[in-house]
Length: 354
Image (cartoon, rainbow, N blue to C red; front, side, top):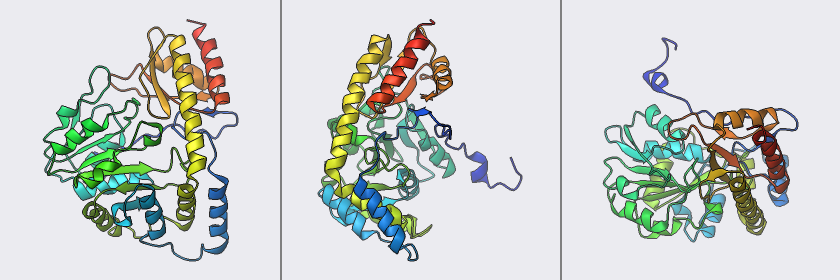
C-alpha cells in the first residue's frame, strides 16, 4: 500500500473477476458468457461502422440506441440510460442514488461488486442474510435508510424473486431507490420493467453481455422514470460524455433489431440448462433452481474447491467462491450441448475416484 494512495484507494477491496486463460482448448464455464456468437447482422454493423465512422466522436446522448431499447420495452428514450457495460451503470447508480450517511441493503450472497462500490464511494451497507434455501427474504429489505439493490435472478445463486415480492419491496421503500440488477433476466420468468410505470423509485439495470452475446462489446443500460435517468446522466456527464463508442452503439442497435435470433439462442441455453440440471442431480449434486444461464451446485461427498481444481486440470473452468455459506458450492455456466457433454465426461472421471 503506497503512502500516495487516497483514502478511497486504501479502503477499496477490488472485485475479482473469473479467470480468463489464453490457453487453447479451454472450455470456459466460469464467467457466464453466452456460448453462441452474436447475430451476423451485429458483426456486419460493427464492421461497417469501423470502416466509415471511427474518425468521428460517438453521440454523447446515444439517442438511436436509447430509442431502440425504449421501443423494445414499451418506454420512451427518456426512460433509458446507456453505459459502458452494466458494471459502469451500477457504479453511476451508486453515486446518483445512494448517500454516504445512509446504509443501503443488499443480500449477503450476491454480486460481489456491490460491496466494492459501497466501499469505494464510502456508502455504509447492510448485508441481509439469504434464507437457508438461498431465497431473498423480501421483508428484510423493507424501510431501508439508504436504498436497496439486488440481482434478479440472484448471482451467484441463480434463484429468481417473484414480481409480487419486488412490488412489496418497492412499496415499503417509497422514499428510496430500489435497484433491480437484471443481468440474467432473459433466462428467467419475466422482468420487473413493468413496475416503472407505477413506481418512481424503481430502477432496472440490464446488459447485452449475456443473452445478446456481447460480453466483449460492453453495453449496459438502466430503465426507470425520467428523473432517475436524468440523475444518472448528470453523473455520467461529470465523468465522460462519450461512454459508449461508435462500434458498441452500432452493434447494440443491431442486437436489439435481431430479436428473433436471440430468442432462439436463449431458448437453446434454457433447454441445455434444464438438461444439465437433471444430469447434475443424477450425479448426487444438490442444485439450486435456476432461472439464469448458470447452475449453482454442491456435492455432499466431494469438496467444491477440489472439484474446481480437478476440472481446471482437465481444461474446464468453473467458478469457485471461497466465501462463508457458499464455500462448498460451484457455479457452472451453461455452454453448448457439446461443451456440457465434455463437462459431464470430465466430471464422471473425477467423481469415479471418490
